[in-house]
Image 1 (cartoon, rainbow, N blue to C red):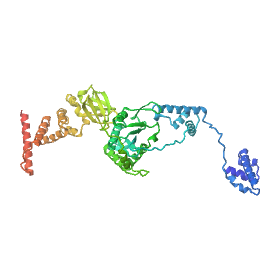
Image 2 (cartoon, rainbow, N blue to C red):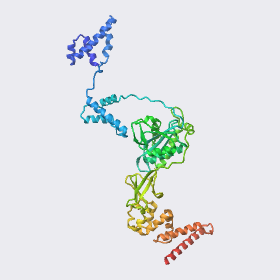
Image 3 (tube, rainbow, N blue to C red):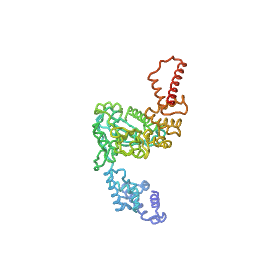
Image 4 (cartoon, rainbow, N blue to C red):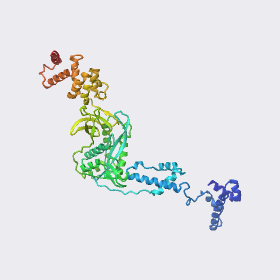
Length: 522
């Protein structure tokens, strides 16, 4: 614009176009263009107002030059490059139809691919070409009206928390949001698997006191088994089991159309920020404590007014009247059948090794994997139960499963994984009374399995008051039986004073000691 202004001012001073071009070191055609535009504008002004002066054309000097780009083509986006872009978009369409929507090439990846193929083209040009090919336009949405209790929406959200002091880890948050009143429910799980998917529905319907008629999902792997076509999906067995048991219908969103369940899409973000964004709201002692906090926050949100003034809790009162009846809770677990028991007396379920009694080595057992624990069956008989673990290749060992093997190999006890993972009380008993003496400890371990760890620990402490360095299983049982009999048939008290109580204890110890001596003599 400064260049244009200078040319016109020099022209008004009477300097020739050639001289202007020479002085300003620009092309003469450029000078001719601006001078001709100015002269034409002056001629039009004088035709309408013969008395007009050149000063009245000053705005003409200040108008920024315009360039005609209507016929300008893309210089670098050759036809070959455009065909490559078309091929990439067609491949994306195939991936969407075969369930690989998250493996599509993004625009930047198409641009990088073109560069590798030797095409000289800019990223902005690639975006314009893709827009032209796809004929992308702003999508119009049709406002929906929902009836109470008819539809709810489900989705997963990811939350990073420190639970139990293990450091920050990712947890999966199942979120439900009713379409009518935006009433929310959320629960945390360690993983996004079939057991968690089913359990979240069971808990949600129990929380609601009834069942919604329709549940809407996106294309999550726990709900969609396969993609039959661009718009047809085959549900997973887990979803079919839920639908048949509770009697609700289900519907899937179109691929990459999260807006079709916009209530829950917003709810995931709203609940996540409302529950865990504040300082101190991302560390909990246990998963149960984290879920209690999450439920409390959901209740607070449900009691708050929406943007339209409605309160979700009040809307939910209307919805409950339209819900379907609630059947008894459906059991939710992942079943693994015919798992072979290896030489370490463990079965592998979901990449974790769980111990079973050593008599099952070489046999095949079934496992039921719940969200919090794992049960292992021999037919209909439950042979083991463990807290569920999630580390790949991890061993979860119960020391009582190895009593038979340890009797034959007592030397293996001290460095065994079984002892390392044993209850703290069991390890303390071993270290306090039996260190280096596994042979005497193993019968005591059997006694713990029979009587319970607490009962054996109590008997050992009582035995230590009577004898020294003699903690055999027989004596522990004798102490336990004597104490149990004393509780079951208490003697008539001599009185309530401390002296009487001390006398009673002394007599009790004397009776035990006499019986121990009698057994030793025998």
